[in-house]
Amino acid sequence: MLEPGAPAPDISAQNQFGEPVSLDFEEPTVVYFYPEDFTGGCTIEARDFQEHLPQFREGGIAVYGVSMDDVATHEEFAEEEGLLYDLLADPDGTVAEAFGLDTSGGRTARRTFVLADGEVKSVYDPDLSDPEGHAEEVLRDVRNEYVQGG
Figure 1 (tube, rainbow, N blue to C red):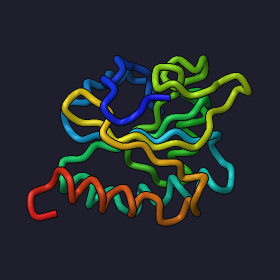
Figure 2 (cartoon, helix red, strand yellow):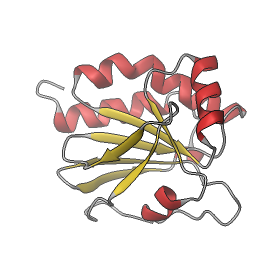
Figure 3 (cartoon, rainbow, N blue to C red):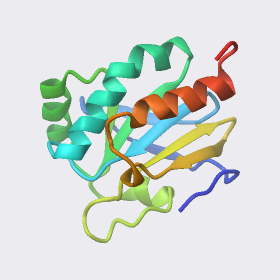
Figure 4 (cartoon, one colour):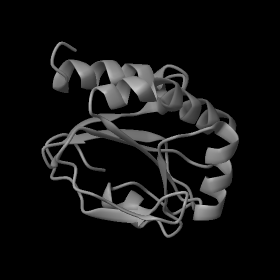
């Protein structure tokens, strides 16, 4: 798994609308991996990031969710939950593997990466805590690090 200080991987994937998305990770970016759309903890985490999305955007911080679900499943999930950030479809596990995550079970572990300036800045293991409140913790840390006035 990528650790802080590692160079950011080159990734591209389709979002929930089937549009190609390529990330360069120069600006502060949160990429959170989750096991599967429509499951309990994953839904809580997605809602939590959505709730805090205005504050992330005010700070110039991009947010992306990634799972091994396909575009159609992401589209349905994003619509049902009112998610206004991109969910990247990674059905073959290419994006997860670029971050060093295990995809052998057809799902990834819950993991959040903060990247900026072309490198990994922090890694979170939300499995160690309640998915509710995780986005707020990440927002607080990223704002303190990258946003003038925190």
